[in-house]
Image (cartoon, rainbow, N blue to C red; front, side, top):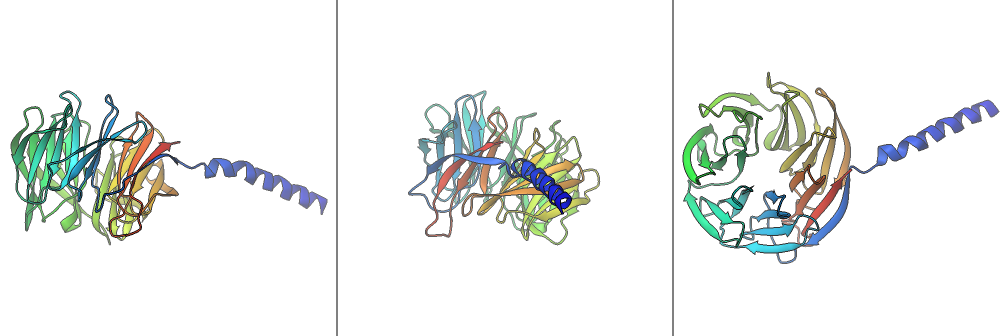
Length: 335
């Protein structure tokens, strides 16, 4: 009996020693900035690392909000938008480009000095998401349609509309571009597919179906391992696709109403931000993944930005549709 008791004691001690490592929270909340007076959804975020500024598209509030990257405190509110969605900060010129939907249907060029709208480009209706290609400095802006829609190509060096890419369905969501700046992956949400675009020819070269799921929203790319990560809303599910074949190599549930996803290369983690929680997923190898945490955030806390240089994840909680929701900007330390 004493021998059995001794063995049980050793086992229990081993478990106790392992628990702290297993239970270490991957995201630690370090700052919360309440956002009273706001209503409706937030859409996307971008950052000015050198100037310590964070920009948030307050979609239904018709503004772009500016915060201090270090402490999350408000700096300025940029007005003059109809429905701001996506945005990119251009450090070389200290300017901001904002996609503006609603009745405006345009992209706006904003000064990083005085926050005034300097210029606009009129685009078709349904202007929404966008993605920046750091190689050719083009900004690919999605606009709506009926059976087809467009990615409007904006040359950010000259702020000119220089072309379009035609895609199937009336809407697409998140995009990712390879390091060479030649290939784009896009969530063709309206037709429940992932599309692959040759950016040199501007042509859609192939599409991959998403099995038993619809409304794919967020996306991230692991190019060295030839893996593409996407998340859907119906049902809320995380998928890993082989970019050589388009085949699904892994899938499991994740945060609902997800909108943004980030691949933490250094820690081999994926962060999927959605309503109420952020799903933290560990990449064991190219084919094996494990959901290691669900971090409580807030109702419709789907908008986020991960900054590897600061080891921080910024999450905007909109609370849209919930009267007693606490709207806030949350800052998490990645650990």
